[in-house]
Length: 161
Image (tube, rainbow, N blue to C red):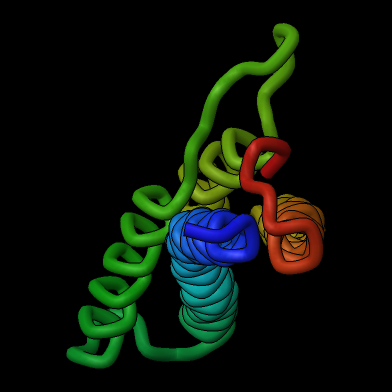
């Protein structure tokens, strides 16, 4: 074999090595991107469901406390829907203490539990305050989670999310 043939062989082996390395790297990157896209997509769906459930809970509670449906089948339907949505919201949250303080999820869960006790007509002001606090905490949670979604999509890193 001539010297040029050795260079050809070295060139072919190096090209094959680089090709294999690129294929492996591409596979790893695609796997990571697919995982991040799945997590981000599911987080967006969760945000939409949580937003809808909190909206339904507040709306149904407001309708029930301000309407004349007491002692009717409509009241039973509304109360059943309020209970269903209340438990759905609680299942969508991750309440915990952080630095001896309740996280936003815990604050929302506490308000969701407290609001049914404030539905008597004599407690309208407390109910209004609790619903407004629920909305404020929910907005903070939704904004925080949305920022995580944007960071995941931009940076491709779930570690800080």
